[in-house]
Each structure stands twice: as structure tokens, then as C-alpha cells.
Amino acid sequence: MTDFSGINAAPVAASLRIQGLVMQIFRTVAAATTLILCSAVAHADVVDGLFVHANAGMSHTSANYGPRDDKSDHSLGFLLGYRWSLADTYAMGIEAGYSRLGNFGSSDISPQTLPLGGTGTSVTFPAGSSWRLRARATLLGATMKWNVSGPWTILAHAGALHSRATVDEEFDFSGLSRTRHTVTTHGGIYAGIGFGYDVTTHLTFALNADAYKIKLENGFVVGQHTSYIRTLGASVEYRL
Image 1 (cartoon, rainbow, N blue to C red):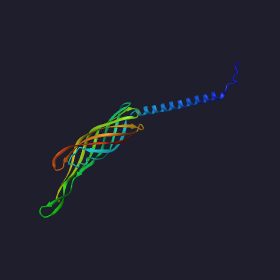
Image 2: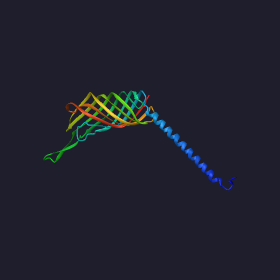
Image 3: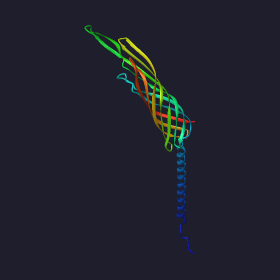
Image 4: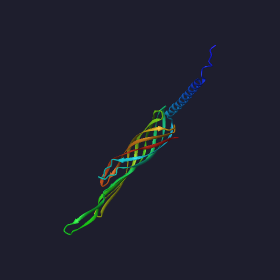
């Protein structure tokens, strides 16, 4: 019979406790990994249904009236639509909405001094021009959502718009001013893309880039001219 009385049991017990702790940690990590993967798989599926989409950001116009053009402003918009799932991770649908594309403008009206020859005196008077563009649009188009990897998703849309562009321009010289106010309503097109994250199957946050093609009256120059307005911002979408 083998005698084990001389063996110290403390190291053996400590080793067994360490092994048990390692196994417990391994089971916890495995469970957490399974939960994350299951969550990602669940988020990967797209579903049919209504959605509400709101966005805000910076806008920039290609309209050019003078050397001091203020071409940047902020944009706001919302969309309401419906998508049909064509596959587990892909859906297409229709949308309609409204967008405040921005207020843009410039002004170089400033005091001008004109010396009166031989008199030693001068006169000061305002001179220069100013303009302001306000652009709005109603939208109707197609929309797409594609879950590329787990909760990461791509949003895209394109369609037709009906714009309302208001231009106010003033020309001032020595107190004699001329103003013009025009309102242009016209059809156009829009398109955009976004990259987002599905927080849940119903809620998505995204970064978006959009472009809008509108028509407007070019101040004192008669005739309609094309302007492109580009926006860059963030959005939130909720699916009902």
C-alpha cells in the first residue's frame, strides 16, 4: 500500500481551485461570445414595415453671386416610407418627405468715400450688392437598406423633388437702390447614401451624404439657372 501521508495537500488544492477558476472564466467568455454573435445575427435580418427617418447636418450650394458668397448653412429633413424585404439582409421601398436645404447669401454693401475735387471735402455713401437664397424641397423616391455585416448597414435613396427657391437681391449706389424678389418652383432630382449601425432591429443611427439639383432665378439676370446643394450630416431612423 502506498503511503501518501507525506504529500502536502495545499498545492494540490490550490491547483484545483485555479483550474476551476479558469474553466469558469472560459464558460463566461463563451457565453458572452455566443450572446454577441446571436445579437449580430438578429440585427442582420431586415423586416418589412413603415419607417420614420430624420436628418440634420451642414449644407453647401454651388450658387455663385459674388466674391463674398456664404455658401454654407445647416439642413434639416424628414422622411416617411415603407420597405419590403427581398432577402434576409436586403430591403427596398418607397419614401416621401421634406427638406430644408439651407439659407445662403452674401453682402458687400459698405460705405464708400468720394473726394470732391478742389474743395477739400468728400462725401460718403453706401454702395454694393447683396443676395440671399432660401431653398426647400419635397421629396418622393426609392429607398434601400442593406445590412452588410451584422448590425452595420448601408442606406441609400434617390428620386424626384419639387423645390422652392427664394432669391432676394439688392443693388445700392449712393442711396439709390434696386431690389428684386423671385420665387422659383421647379422639379429636380436627389440622391444620397448613408453608413449606419442598427442599435436594435427597429432603431438605426447613420452618417449621410446627399445631393439635390434645383432651379432658381439668378438675381437680376433673367432666366432659370441650375444649382446643386450638397449636405453632410447624421440621421436617426425608427422602424415601426
